[in-house]
Amino acid sequence: MAEQLNEYQGKATMEKITSLAKRRGFVFQSSEIYGGQNGAWDYGPLGIELKNRIAGAWWKEMTQLNDDIVGLDAAILMHPRTWEASGHVENFTDPLVDCKKCKARFRADMIPEENLAAKKCPECGGELTDTRKFNLMFKTHIGPAEDTASIIYLRPETAQGIYVNYKNIIQSNRMKIPFGIAQIGKAFRNEIVTKNFIFRTCEFEQMEMQFFVKPGSDDEWFNEWRKRRWAYYGKLGVKMDHLRWHQHGPDELAHYAKDAYDIEYLFPMGWRELEGVHNRTNYDLNRHTQFSGKDMQYIDQDNNNERYIPYIIETSAGLTRNVLMILCDAYDEEQVADKGNDDDWRTVLRFHPSLAPVTVAVLPLMKKDGLAELAQDIRRELKEDFAADYDQAGAIGRRYRRQDEAGTPFCVTVDYQSKDDGTVTLRFRDSMEQIRVPKAELAARLRQEIKEYKRTK
Ligand code: GAP
Image (cartoon, rainbow, N blue to C red):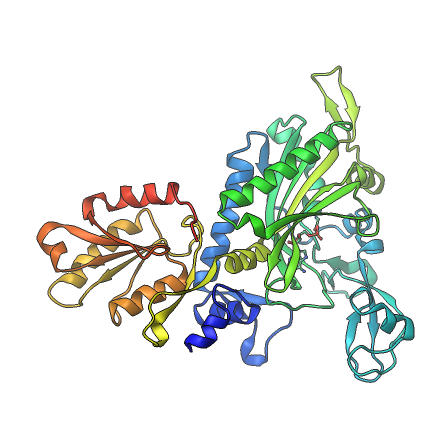
């Protein structure tokens, strides 16, 4: 056991992350009892807490800390003309090939060029079909008639809900350019290849912010948003040497983009896109003007009613992909003893305390002699301000390990001394250091520790 762990020491693999996620109730495969649904995942008790906290951190960063950004929650189902205007009906496609022999399906841009040129299946050597375009939007029907007039799409990005509302928001909230609109919500893509756990899925969530600027100031704002989005991950305590920029080359640029950079993260399977910062120009608003017949110009009342279609700088992050990144980033295995036992090693998720699903766990050393009751009282008090867990099952060492594996940054242990002098043991997840703290000071101490947290390992 120790040898096996030693091989991977400190190294997250996708298998370990997936298995820990299931074991501890972060993420389960969708409809598992029926063999699972490809491209869909369910977030369990710890997973939904983690996802909510990541979404909360992003929301705070974008709206609360920015005077000129407001929020929106637009519907998933939008008028189908939206997607003609946005270019998704025409352009949101992947090149697809099938193997006639083994029936495997590939994205043509993901198989070796020689296989594509020779039309040879990379798995069985069978003959491949011609490449055809496959639209990634999920299509369904609204209303009782399943005809072309009733076609409706599940949105493939949240951005369009913002564009079609931008004039409503200017009018209702008296916004002046430059300003932004932020949104978190589900998006759907009929992905041909879904692998690597929750990295690329058919149903996922995005955290997108669209910033409306005067044409000509777009390059400046684009650089400004690149800086801000980079700094944000530092605030979350992410390993900054696991992040890098990737600028889109001419072949990669989306149909709407003038310039685009991805923030990539070093996942166990390699560097992959985490978030995109895009200069979408005035493409979307021009197209919505054209397709809806509505005037999408901004009227600058502070500047002689100058009229223009704003440019848009977009920051677009995957929320569910951020969950995977935070899990990978936090994952660690550490040797804590050398006795040749299984428990010489611990698996620990080093979440930033503000993201951890459980902030503090209260553990009575024994169930008897009133210690359990005292611990329950402490937990009840802490619960008002923190996500507080309670665990009295098993040896204290095992309980610490369980909390380490869930990423709980603080444990409070109640022992006989607590009954005598009102102090408890505060144990820190990362260092495993233990100190005594008067229970009356616990909440203030935890608040301070969360605020001043610096990742050391
Ligand atoms: N509105 C622009 C847009 O949607 P994108 O690069 O296609 O741009 C933005 O997507 C982000 O959404 C990506 O950086 C990624 O984090 C996330 N994302 C995209 N497709 C995804 C999928 N199939 N599964 C999970 N996350 C996805």
